[in-house]
Figure 1 (cartoon, rainbow, N blue to C red):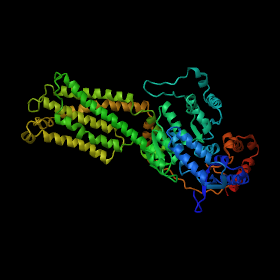
Figure 2: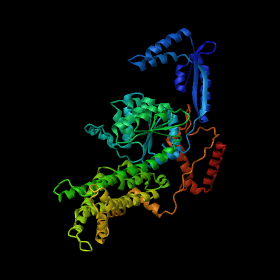
Figure 3: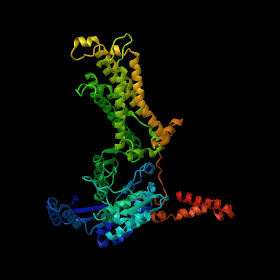
Figure 4: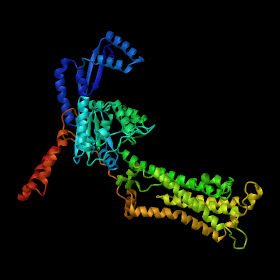
Amino acid sequence: VRCPEGKLSLYCKGADTIIYERLHPACKTLKDVTTEHLDVSGSEGLRTLVLAYKDLEEGYFEDWRARHHTASTALEEREEKLDELYEEIEKNLQLLGATAIEDKLQDGVPQTIEQLAKADIKMWVLTGDKQETAVNIGYACNMLREEMNDVFIISANTAEDVREELRNARRKIKPETIEAEPIFEVKQPKNKSAVLPEDTVEGEYGLVINGHSLAYGLEKSMEVEFLRTVCMCKTVICCRVTPLQKAQVVQLVKKYKKAITLAIGDGANDVSMIKAAHIGVGISGQEGMQAVLSSDFSFAQFRYLQRLLLVHGRWSYIRMCKFLNYFFYKNFTFTLVHFWYGFFCGFSAQTVYDEWYITLYNLVYTSLPVLGMSLFDQDVSDRWSLEYPKLYEPGQLNMYFSIGSFIKCLLHSIYSSLILFFIPYGAMYDTMRDDGKDLADYQSFALLAQTCLLIAVSIQLGLDTAYWTSVNQLFMWGSLAIYFAITLTMYSNGMYLIFTASFPFIGTARNSLNQPNVWLTILLTTILCVLPVVAYRFSRTELRPTINDKVRYKVSKSKHAPPPQATRARIRRTSSRRSGYAFSHAQGYGDLITSSRYLRKNMATFSPRSKTNAKQPGTVLKTYRAVKDTVVDKTL
């Protein structure tokens, strides 16, 4: 900054651990006073920063600026040269003081994280805050809980110590993984990235690692050891990490795990992490728009992530899977009927359907119904989706669309094509009309086969649709009505007289669709096509129901939908005790929380089975009153 008087000054802000290293030795007295202010502000739940300045001489600054320009335009080692210049000028700073601002969690963050955890979504926190602060945030967000078996702290200063702490953690989680270390291999298919096998773990564990230890864990020789250990933990918190380390952690997961990664952040230091993940989400808030501009999705509150994943994301996955399965089914069935017909036409390339039907099949007759399903279908409502987060798990396991489901779809198509060809063929063979005239001609058979096909695939779509709207009804019945209207129009005498070469099926629809045996054939063919599907789904629901089947059954039996989730109002706290999610620079309650000592003491005091309480009935009431008075006093 150049003052109006012409004096040059350098101003700097940052965390106390960073700024204190750059202060002039003469600032010791002010430094002690500022540290006391930081402790007071931190105990009130405020986020603190330290400010410092330095007066610059004109000659030195001009020389430094010239060297800075040279370094910024260097073709080699540009970042290293710039870092050296920054370190050079940020020395012997004069301490100005400290700032403290309120920085609390958004509404609904703990509830959202709890819901996502129930959906078996693994959440890692990558933050630049101190370890104490990160642990407090973890407990405030329900990521770290007292019910966990253990919470491991990785804070070593050498590579060997980091490796040893990681192995000690894995030895406590699952000892057999250490014993089988020599035979452990990372599977790497040909022309694909390596895949780290999953380790089943009994119990829940948490892990906290600082940035210095994380730098060793991300090295080539230790990345597999690090990733294998942290993947055994339910919650992972990386504190004091740089923006580059955030991106490296995401890339490490993408490299060795078959997982879809989602990164969410609100600041410029989260941009690299958001870009490295498969899906990037930016929160538009007080820290600028860099994260929003670099993301795939953007919203204002973290709690909106709950509906994005558990409701809209799950609905979108189900709709897409149903669309793909049905699209393959209807086109495989449509095509395989031609294959069976080839045995009877000498493979002469003659089509079994009318050429106009082939043109309009995907364009008009079957396009709108499947579009309506893929846009509006939902297995359960949004409230039930939030009530049962476990409904999200089938998508993680690829239960709705995989190689197995594709093979089932192919077998179903083969069966349906056999029914759709041979049942009409047998029904039309040597058949006569009511008036004694011949009905067994190519055009009548083609009309019967294509009508059976369209009705069968339409009923199949109806069985796949779980949520009926007026739009679905309109598309379904409208497509069938359009088919019969177009068929009767194209096969009429008028169209034949106007376009003789284009509409040769004159009178076929009028002469065939007025016969009872034709409609009985359509009914029999349709029932035989959908009967195996109905039987299979009924048997699966009764014998091996999925979580989706169980919830849908409960929805059908329930008279009322679950109430909407209540949004908790923000309450301003005036307690002098530090909040669980405060960004402080003083020693907090992390050690006490992780030790669980205060919980054991309270449980022993309030337990109804305690011998002391059994002998002295008034002890519980007295203890409760004493604790209640203390809590009320602290709160006020």
